Length: 181
Image (cartoon, rainbow, N blue to C red; front, side):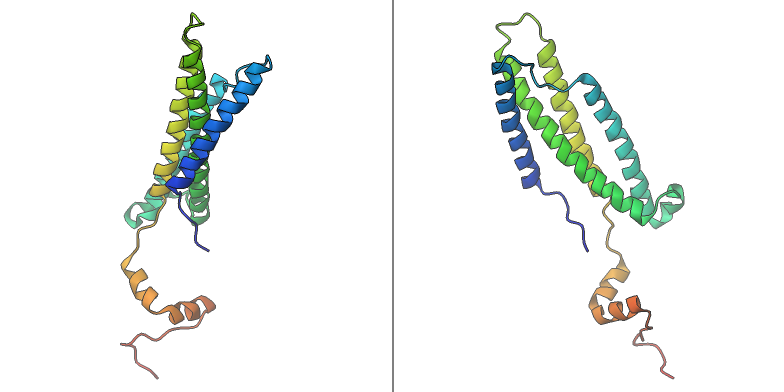
């Protein structure tokens, strides 16, 4: 089974849906006398720490995928690398949602600037947009760091598809230059 990579169209769709949902739900909340639906600053700080840890894992996977640097990433294995890719894709989707939601709040806060004497809510919305874009970017970067470059042996094995099936089952395969007994 092959893992699919991030699609820009889907990330854009998630951003737009979060933008629309953020605008509608914030409008309903404020219209009903409730609070503005902005994430607390601690969530945004945690997202930056989250991105730093994810980027570190991405570096480890990148080192592991390069044979000459593999000893620098001893704690890494293929399963952890696959989990890191899934984690990176999740970060990209969550970042798109954070960014879309906070762009909606930013427009709402800018609309209220003439009624308020403080820029604090606008600053919070801007920080939210920045953290969402950071998560989106780090997710996309780490996903690209986790891609394994094709090797020369992959081309040879691709031309011998039946041999790959036999090798997977444990049967030996004869190369053209081998002697038959």
